[in-house]
Length: 147
Image 1 (tube, rainbow, N blue to C red):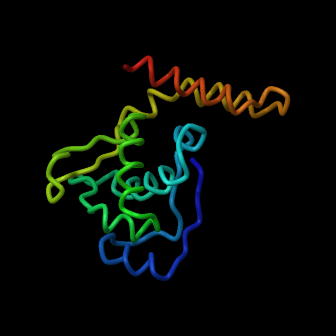
Image 2 (cartoon, rainbow, N blue to C red):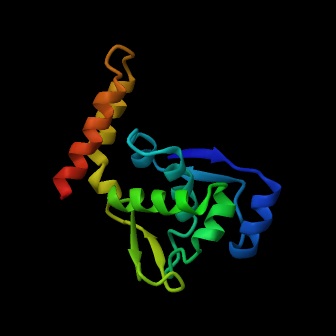
């Protein structure tokens, strides 16, 4: 797991309203960190959803709220949510109803991307073998095996 330090007064104030014991850092699982197919916004958004991973109700925040927390426009939030869902990192309930939508971390993403992460980890040991195009292909193949 990768720890990302997060300290911003405006974010802290917003997040502390909704999350008890707001952390000074966000976690980034290696299964998402090593996936070079994901845009930076997806990483940020996943970190916010990860705060709700133990919540039975999931993340019910609107795209407007998420845009303020993450620092992206609402259209980017929508696009990155779709990307995270397409890559099986999140599940969405009540997708059609913005007031009832719930976003959950997909409990199977670690299982889906376990093998690719191990391959990438081995590649990273040798600079000569490290190849971002190959890493992207490894994750694409893992996702396609699910489809």
